[in-house]
Image 1 (cartoon, rainbow, N blue to C red):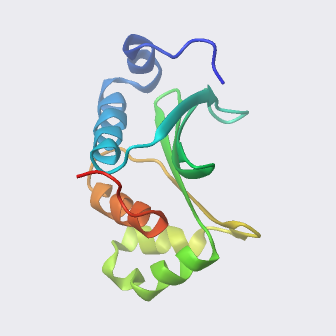
Image 2 (cartoon, rainbow, N blue to C red; image 1 turned 135 degrees about the horizontal axis):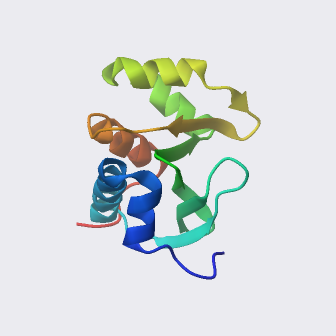
Length: 137
């Protein structure tokens, strides 16, 4: 847990204006679909901040921030991977390739995206829906 949540100015300074916009737009899309607990943490060795969406002890996804870079992680477990693989061809080539290249761990595939624009957002939301049905609307 962070003692103080970074301000919009700090985040803009860290990520740069265009990436902070992407950060906010993707967060808005997730919040339109999901009502979840959100927590800020330090980002470990590779990232300055982690911003996680959780509910009932389960993580939906996490955002990461470091200088001029946004990270967005979704972990697909065994059953979720089967669902994704059944409809894999309906996702963008970038998502398919990243899936194929991502190492599978005992607890699933750790998809780390580094969005620089909004073109993959629909696919990200579809991936989240594999993990958990939206609980808003």
